Image (cartoon, rainbow, N blue to C red; front, top):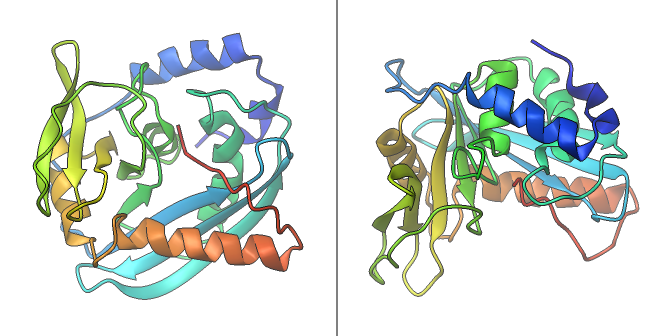
Amino acid sequence: MEDPSGYEFFTPAEAIAYQEELRNRITIKELIKPIKTIAGADISYNKYSEILYAAIVMFKYPEMQVITTSTAISHTSFPYISGLLAFREVPALFIAWNNLYIKPDVLVLDGQGIAHERRTGIATHFGLLTNAVTIGSAKSRLAGKYQEPANSTFAESPMYDKDEQIGVALRSKKNCNPIYISPGHNISIPQSVDVIKNCIRGYRIPEPTRQAHLLVNKIRIEHGDNNTTQLGLFD
């Protein structure tokens, strides 16, 4: 397991080259092991600040009962660049991950998996770093084209980049914009969608990342950072 603490010293060109290297190691495959635990991860920060707040909330699955949580506060000087946000966010998340006394069977991240121009959104990047099973559940599209899904709960539409399916646009709630599901690492596209559907509890975003979002913002406020520009798109 590599240490991502040196990411802040990468140039943008070096970060892109590293993503191309990571791309060759991605494994998208059927997950055979039963899922008994699942966790959600989120990061909050002001894009002009070097302070980042990370949170992970772990649940029993499929009951979605909280088992444990982990948080971290970290610093980085890597700039805010779309498509390279993992280089800002992974180090903080890595600290929170290492603070968990047990690791979840699946980690859902508030951002992209392979639905990324170089297939290396943060869910994929983090999955490769830790060899965890990861899923990206993003609130906005970064790459890929799709037909708008029907306006009904769990209507879905495949997302394609040229001839390659890279994810699914899922209407998690009627009259809401879709969310964008893509596998990160060690899981398939259909399984990723099924897992996220099982994690929807009446809100647009799945319960693991929703709870992680609430926790990370609580930690941020307790730390005295009340800036309302709360980002962490996990691109």
